[in-house]
Length: 345
Image (cartoon, rainbow, N blue to C red; front, side, top):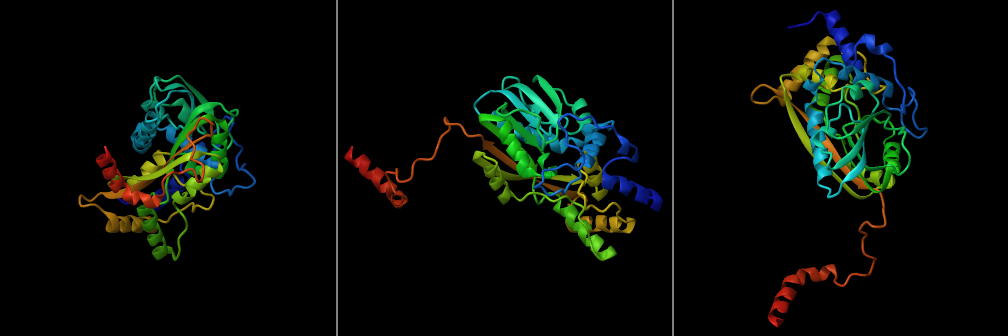
């Protein structure tokens, strides 16, 4: 069914902003949350953090937020699996950018003694999912953590750091609040996320309007992530990537779910209005280029997983240079050496 032009444009203005017009005056409760527009002097100001806060608050206030939680719950469970793979207990942990608590619900009190859940959206904290772990909710910005040095044994973060303007600073602060031998386990969207949607919008907008503007926010490249973690002070790094593909009836259903997740674009250079003809053309391009055999369309979410440890003298270290007793050249003869050893016995 085609919508009237006026209603269509109004809906897309709201989608571009990610929230209804009445929430523009929503009161902000500050507790370790940065002021609108405040960033580190060295940071590029790419994202409107105040708008992102409103988007997440709006999404958390919806009657059925669980309808849009499927992706964040899946990634949260995978983060929890990585926590459980570490053979130790964590008396004090921090979930940074927790949302509605997508990681906490998959953890147990046998592993985590107490969990601080921090997010910029107060409504997400108020509507958090149930967990058996004792929790404390903290309204805080990922770039301005209100915690002392050497506080936490574990810091986790799932699908939140890709909206941070100053990622190096955020990683440095995570390292700062970790205790020595503490571990950070995180996940964030990668550069190939929603490439189908990006390509469809660019092709349609170029054909209909003679050029295109960014509608998908920029993401960090995986080859930069290890460098940023190392520069923040982490060691014994692990960085890997995975893809999750979700099928949707059409492009507009995908966009509705992104809004319900609180993942609408909040870049300062976003285009506030997309014309009706351009959107219909983009939906047609999407279906023509990427549709599945059953008529649905796929959306790819690339996820970067990262693990980094804060230095402690008890951690394993590489051997000193020159201390090896066998060269790499001799490894090719290892089968012969083993056979000779057996014969001598």
